[in-house]
Length: 198
Length: 424
Image 1 (cartoon, rainbow over the protein chains, first blue to last red):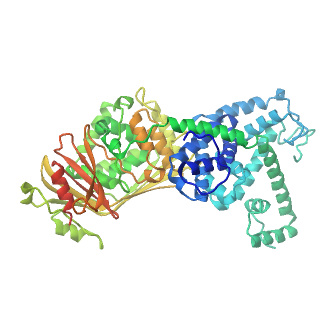
Image 2 (image 1 turned 45 degrees about the vertical axis):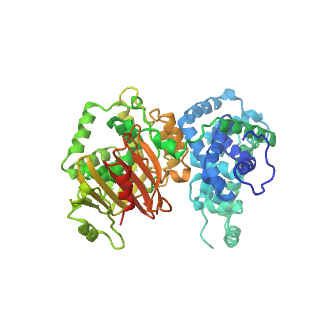
Image 3 (image 1 turned 60 degrees about the vertical axis):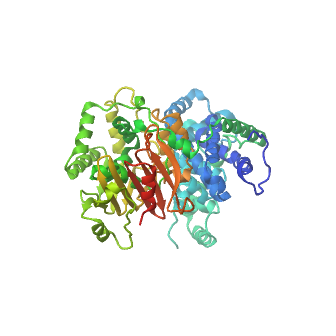
């Protein structure tokens, strides 16, 4: 098990080979989901935990579909546990408070996150806004953005299939609201700043 | 015009996640409904914003990064201790587990579930209690449990006295009512059909057969030590029962906060905002334990007792919002659980965890993988034989179909195995 190569294709394999293939295929997306849920700092370790769990789990013997569903569910649960145990929420609220200070010098005229404001500052704002979402909203949003179908999102986030659309719509609306607020754009007042569409 | 769709459907339309017919109907509605067109536009705006926003968090790892992560994972896998064999697991010990303080600590950790299990057995006669423990969990597979007592809070004198009083109480119903009141005070509702009649002594085996539900076969053992052959066994039957424990998590958390001050120094505190294995989004959880009809037969007295018990496995059902794997992880993370035990528990596959009964074994116990019901050691059901270090007492556990069996008593391997092989 000291191999450091990665299988590039997903031909039929067993045991360690299958594990390696699964890792190559799913690690990038799992990592992306965890980055969305936890932030880049913790995503590396959390992704390792997810695959360590897979290694000692019988899911490796299951079909690709079942295993993928399990992987994303475990990723979400791992993230939930980390979120709770490290009280990140409080820390991020503090950070969000700091970011909301005027000296954060965010360009308020243009709220399109893809333009104008320095990318790092925008990313920090997005992170802070994401951390203000409820865990379920965050999970649904991040899973969907990672390209999972509604059914896959429902399974991974532990929500009903019929509620994915609604949760997603709310999560996106909340993310935008939080972002605008953190960027210094009040929901009402300050009429000279226009929070137009991105 | 069709009624206006909810936002979830409009959002699904944007993602192309509606069935073609539903999408067509929605499109027809949109052409006729300016308000919904506006809603759709707003949803699209938020969705586009979210897409761009999340893209700022960084792309997925590239192949080189993924390869480095694979290398790190390999290194961690190589460090992991090999899971011990079943034999190794069984021979590690659990003497201290049996101590009351250890039980108290574990009960606290397992919260309501342990209470359910305890209550299910409360009315039971003491001599059969040990044997009946087999019926507490879906199926069984033995592992050992080492608990470091020094890491557990010592029960206060008042707690010790209360436990002792309850253990010896002659009126199980009163004890149960008392426990129910205490639980209700912390947001846990208990709804059970277990009464002091759920487990009861009956006259003889014929009475047990008469009490059995249709289709249930009541068995007995025929190979008995000579000294036990004269007396008829005492027979107990347990009727099916159902116990539902519902926890109002807001109140449970409140109670934990209030009681945190009362915990002894050094006791592992439970973080009320971070209940192990509990989805933070659920407001209540429920555990349902259904036990089936079972029969216990007891021959002999005192140390020279032989017990034979069998019955269908009970079923414990947990509501959504309880992650049994996370619960396990939290349990084994307790400083009271030894490294050996942690390794053993973690080696149980995720899909077997919820079927596994931990059988505590005394210090120095001898454990053997045996077979019951075969001919000359060939065939039969795999069974677990556990003997005390002197080989003078022990138990055999096995399962046939849906039925769990145990033969236990103050006899050595030969007598126990002969008895187990003589089940009729």
